[in-house]
Amino acid sequence: QVQLRESGGGLVQPGGSLRLACAASGLRLEYNAIGWFRAARGNGREGVSCITRDGTTYYTDSVKGRFTMSRENAKNTVYLQMNELKPEDTALYYCATVSVEGRSWYHDEDDYWGPGTQVTVSS
Image (cartoon, rainbow, N blue to C red; front, side, top):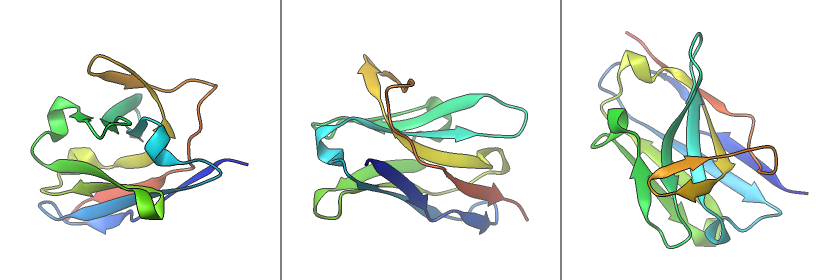
């Protein structure tokens, strides 16, 4: 049974940092493209970042230069280091297996995703 589980969310002040982790069981993350998504209240789902099987990373424009995605194969975990956080980064963040087309990524009903971890940026 494949499971993805996110951790590392929380409440942080603007300008602060968090590191999210996505740990997998039943699936080797290094053999899949993995994406981070976020869903904020009143907004749709937004792709935040993606890492391909060869380690190439892509980011949505609003987080470029602030967020860094990485993968640790020995722990079967991917990370999202989030720096200079802003109130507009507040959302439920979740990871998923994805398909990649050019610089875009998405997941559908055939993919796997976790329940998410809440990130709240507020003073």
